[in-house]
Length: 365
Image (tube, rainbow, N blue to C red):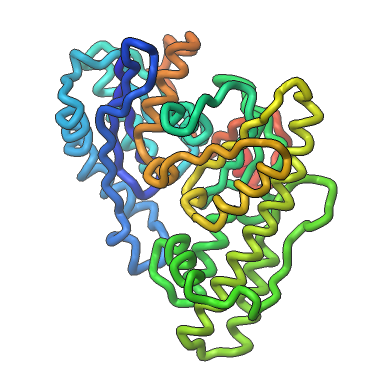
């Protein structure tokens, strides 16, 4: 089985071919990602119109490169999977319409994929490297737009246990970087600066610490960073490094405490599972300090942390192709997929009560 995956939900134009070998094990035949960092760096964040135009210009070539690297043609592909949401609507339209054209012209099934499901299932794609990841497992999804704890029961079966009540963690990293004059993208810049700083210099809050619910909050932490920076402006390089280190420490300790509550709930819900699996996914999962904190938290609860390789934490098309394979194996291929409309908002758990940005397009989180 071979599936062509296409990802254009934000500022990466990506295509990939993922296959199952004769033993049923996943294999990434190609994974081509073109980042738009330079296009958006001057603005300190992603500009939707610029991103959509860049996808239009690059996607055909990226798909061709992915097929060439995989040494296959469209005739060798069993299906086409594309991100259909959530994300920036312009980019979603470009990717999904391209996938529809390829699927229709080659007479292959089309699989509209939830971008968050791609992240949720990445750990099963990398199972040959990280160990088996059976259902059910607990997912921490941390990215620029999402911070959630999700119970992954199976393909297409997700139950949200916790979410952010205000800002996503990735957004908090990006806003902190912009405030301190660090380059875009903010997450890696803050992590690099933190490595040179003194994490004990500033005492930032640990939002919701001690509360029984497992939700997250990062708005107050952003405010505390801004107030600390304003109080000692103009900032030296040492000031910036110390603020970043203190901010990152507050984030890791907050995540450890919040995730620990969900792990305890998982143990109560599934007492027969000897060693629960905690999966971390999304762009923020590339942060090494966060990984170390989650690894220690999992160990304290008798669980095993599974984190994808760094290149598969950020947006990529391999995870979309893999989600397509998982859906094909589960018999979840829709006959009317060519009529599927892209969704800028598309929660994994559509039964969960909305927390942020509820409106006619649905809940942001």
